[in-house]
Amino acid sequence: MATGKKRKVQIFSPCKALEFDAQALESLFHFLDEAAPHSITEGDLSLVLLSQERHSQLHADYLNDPSPTDVITFPGDLDEKLAGEICVSIDTAYSYANNHQLNFSSELILYFIHGWLHLAGFEDHSEEGRQAMKKEEQVIMHLLETNHQVPLFKYQPNE
Image 1 (cartoon, rainbow, N blue to C red):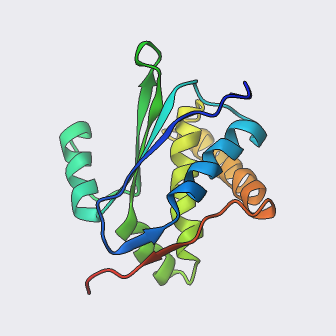
Image 2: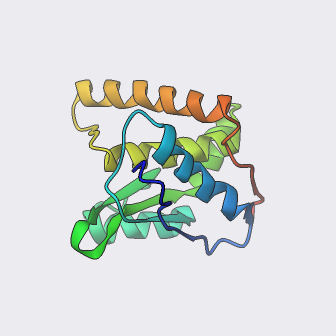
């Protein structure tokens, strides 16, 4: 979307235990629009950060699967000027990062990248698709890290 005009990025985060700079997250997606090797449809982009419980309910309601998952991506609608919606599970990212000694912020951004790649046309329903997506996730994550585009997220879940 390198048109010079920045897309509107709407962020919904009802979780009071999550702290982050919304402007930095929005800037990350503006950076992807300008610098990433792939692009998504023009239009507004919606980002949703949910607890695992709410994310699993979304998974059940829209995909008939109540199991926990990390990211759900809804395609956009050109007529409505929507690029799409990326919904991530904060708790899944937090647990995975802690269990694998990874950086929570990077793990959460990886989920957003995964969703963004779905909007860019990548699929992960086949082994070939999963491998291509994993490779591209690494390319984009490296691009973001080397350009200091990974926002800091702080999360203190009720344990």
